[in-house]
Image (cartoon, rainbow, N blue to C red; front, side, top):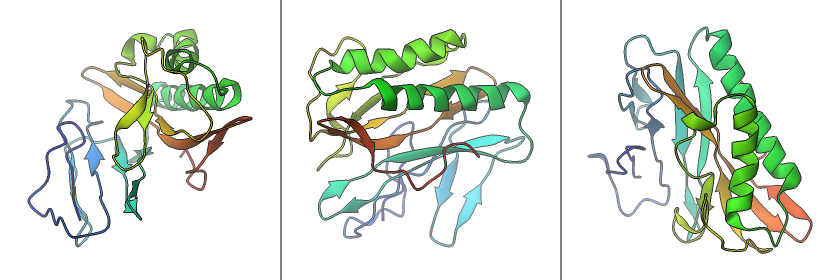
Length: 196
């Protein structure tokens, strides 16, 4: 088992290179941007003061192939603004799922999500690429990001993970694993609800 700090990628002290599962830990969605650490042995969480929402970023490696999944989870009552951001991110994911087609450039797919967040006045808070390939490594081509002109082809597996990070307030990211087919995207991580 490997618990990773999702901001730095550093391994926690309980890293076991012989375990089959790789868990990436919890991300920094706290208003101060502090890293929230989770030690899943014993299910002990160390939540920070005034935590309202957190990102659970997990993955597992099976038969040599990686997965990567993030959900934003409210902890108690969240504000109307936070709810609107979660819904806008879900809308961005839905638009990517509806519009992405084989033969598109990676940057065009990223642009679908950015355009959606821009419509809500949130694109300036989306500070990373939309996604990355999944395979033997958890981060590999194709990188679904601005400026990447690589063509996305059927058979490619990658993430779509739009995020909004408001400095001094909170961060929200939702991530799905998808397969590009001849007809468009197929969600591989469909069994977990995106909207809490």
